[in-house]
Image 1 (cartoon, each protein chain N blue to C red):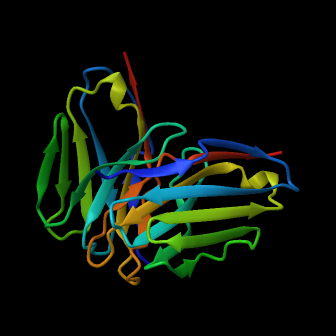
Image 2 (spheres, helix red, strand yellow):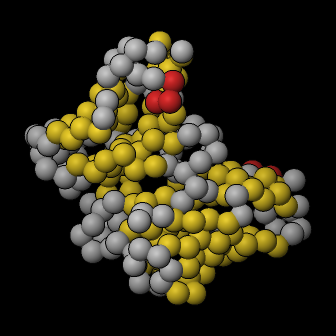
Length: 113
Length: 113
């Protein structure tokens, strides 16, 4: 089973709202990732968690706040977003160690009004 | 800095035609992954190639990793409308041990019935 799940599938929020995206995997993967993707472009890395510790923050604005409560769960907390933050947000996981392959979830389509 | 250059960026063909997508770099990669992505969905892993010169087949799709592990190709035989989507090649950033992926710019394929 190589399944990564993400909820919600779609999210519409105002610029003053606070919302969270959730990602879950039960494959025993110890590296988890958040990406942002605009239409017809490759995913852009936002954050990397390795063994539940934040290892990479790609200079993401503080209105995006990641959290890794345990090895299976990854959250992305959103606050005071801008319309240009509207995009497809993808979660991915990797076994870690020497394994390179990442498995992606179905994504959350976020619209900021 | 490692880069992956994909070509062509856009491809529109008739059902039944053959096509090849290229993913090239001046850098050596330990592996390359190919993903297919449909609009509004997450990338789905098609294959990981690891060994230089390796050829992998997935039904009508043939993947090749260059002998020097600097390039890869995806060949589709007798394309079908269900092959329509964004094809992404990706490889691990060799300067990072967090599994950060470098993506090509993607190839948008449209197969017309």
